[in-house]
Amino acid sequence: MPTRRPQPFCFLLVPVLLSAALLGTGCEESPTGRKQVALVPEAQMTALGEQGFAELLQSLPLNDDPDMRAYIGCVAEALVDALPPPHGRWSIAVFDDPTPNAFALPGGKIGVHSGMLQVARTPDQLAAVIAHEIAHVLADHSNERLTQELAVQGGLMLVDLFAEEPGSLQHEVLRGALGIGAEYGLLRPYSRTHEREADRIGRDLMARAGFDPRAGVALWRNMAAAGGSQPPAFLSTHPSHDNRMEELDEGLEQAVEVYRQARAAGRMPACSPP
Image (cartoon, rainbow, N blue to C red; front, side, top):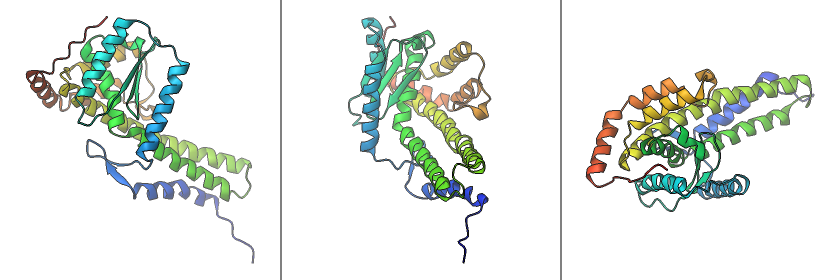
């Protein structure tokens, strides 16, 4: 009796079923209460973050302006001090790069491009940037994203395994369609969710550290002015500047009250721009 081969439409179910299995197990909650799946062990994520940071230190030039480094370090350290204990030790590097960018990696690694100061023009605005990046680490977004990518890659491997004619045009078209579907239907929407969540967590963190959370809206106005046109929100891994500013306004009054309480309690970072 001839073996019955899976029909092409069955291939479409593989990534869906695999993702559904992942979403049904190992669920945790982010700091905002959102359900998430982050299956990579913390120790492995820390090792990946430390390795990536070490490679950046070797491959990218560091800024040698002591005043700039002291200023950025002052803001970052004030934010780290406001984290719930035990927050561990965080490393901070200032890269000599004119692009306005910053990042934080698992394992407590923070990187800021010197060009960020052209957009984040005040200590409060710089705090909004760095707090946002720290929030990605607090919410385990790297782990969640890596888990999603592993699920997608597993689905693509199964497509290859069950392909009736590996390498055929039909197989490659199907494989490409699955990749596009996963990218725009799973990975990018989650990334936009991560960005929105990091905005909220970062806003609350900077308020607890004694930085004015209202600066976040001003920061994104500066970003909008410097960034020019953006791709449509549906295809972007970041919310549009307008949407971002609107969402930051939500809950801002509570964050301002936290900020005032932090200042009254003596949290008044004295970070002077160079």
